[in-house]
Length: 456
Image: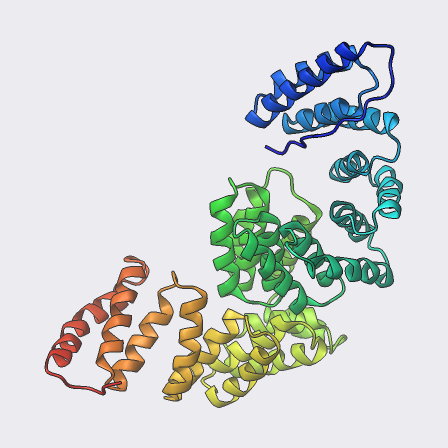
């Protein structure tokens, strides 16, 4: 419960005795005690009692607004904030609270001058800067304006104890300015402070989806499912991930679950429809008149990856060349190389990708797979260990680590990784691999007891 406690109150002069003023202070303090304890309705009644005794009491108006907001009554909260500002025109706390509320209510034109006034008085007011940044982002303001706000927020995050919300706002500006690596770093900072921060997780999953990082996107989705009760945002995220996996029917089923389809959802549905209704031959025909169409090239890259890996590679390469800033094309290109068993080429490409995007788990997984197939085990171990550390609940990396250490006759490490795989693997989805590991594990444990294998 957020409640501002006022230690020293400065009352507007009214025709009351000194004794009456002391009574008003007592009533106000009782109201704040109830407010802090969560008795919002009781607090409001006492705030109103204080206001009856002293109508020119801005602190009581403001606190009543805070209580109304906590009760989910934004109209009443807005009215109280406005009255508090009327009583104390330059009170930045009340102006900021009203400005933030107006932004949340999409009353951007009213909020902007109010927030600017706050920043004229307090240039580094974090809540006002964050709210103004939200306005600028929604208005698709010029890059110069966003950069100006970003510089201010960088200054705030460089100070002691920045809040998660400041890091999240900084990330939103960085992302809008095309600085996705910086944005991910800022979101990581926000999540270090608050691992369950929904805004940070939602932003981060959008960024990794754009990069085609299916593995990390699913990991973040799992975290979101634990902190969100469900609803449209999760359905859209699942649909986007399923599209990356070319599971279009399942993606459409997620979109069918939406209560109120957003423009983003409509756009995604149209994209899926276009993909599903166009054959490879039709897309190739369209490509004749638009040779560098990255969307068509990307579809062909994904569509032909299993059916015709060699052809898919060519389209993936062209998609990446046509849209080099789109990491999804580069990852798709590398995945097509792995599918075609061109492991050396895949390794070279994925090493370049993780040089640019070191936290792309899908790129790391493909790189690890290619290195494994080439029997470059020492290098593969580095990548599989990264995956295991980044996603300790994901079983796959432990299976490969077990096999590699087994091949290298490092039986202690092999046994540890096999056991972790059995512990984490899905008993239905991974039934065959679990059976293989279960059969192999006793032999490995016997070798350990016999003192065989490499010692570290």
